[in-house]
Amino acid sequence: MNKRQLAAQNTKRKLITAALELIKENGFDIINVEDITRKAGVAKGTFYTYFKRKEDIVLDISRVPFSEIVDELLLMESMEITKKLTHYCKRFMECVESCGINICRQWIRDVIDPNHVPNNKDSQKWNFDVEMLKTILENAVMDKELKPDTPIELLTHVIICELYGMMTCWCMSDGTFEPLDWVERFCDVQLEKILEQFTV
Image 1 (spheres, helix red, strand yellow):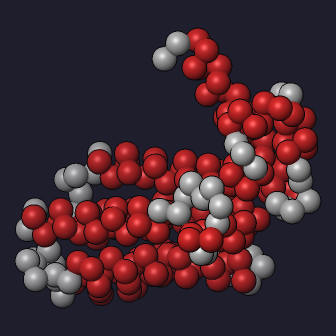
Image 2: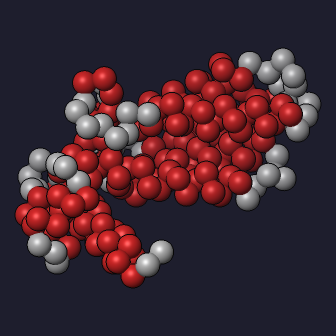
Image 3: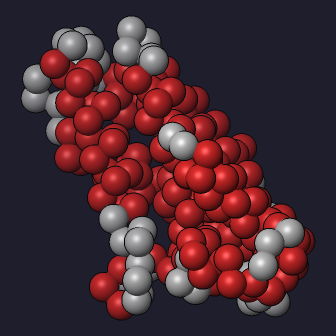
């Protein structure tokens, strides 16, 4: 990566960081592009080099941390399936909580109907999450950790629906529902029970 590319990457990171801080403090609707660029210390026009509209920055904020989980899971090949899935679920919710409830609400609004959100770069988030979980489970079958007749599709959707449900409950409860606490309960109580009948 040359100096120009590094500078561009750094500028984009500044904009994302500034937007995240402002949204956490004030909520999405109150801030504007000028607020973000002022906080980032760049010219207003610079924003449009990286994003078409204010909503697009939320998609970047919500996507980046989840790509880190993929990298972490690659390093956990030898870990048994229950621990691997527990790690995935907890990290998923940590990423959601670290962005804050206002980012979560805006992200849900942006992707709830991916067919009707213009320029929606993240319309594949659901598919991304489903495929990631499915791959983890398929690998566990291939590695003989799970039985060959394990209902991969069903387990994938049960887990992802739990995670998305907790995220939505957090927003709907105005933050009184604690998703990190509940994901731990889910992993300790339900996840182990769900998997035990399929474990070799």
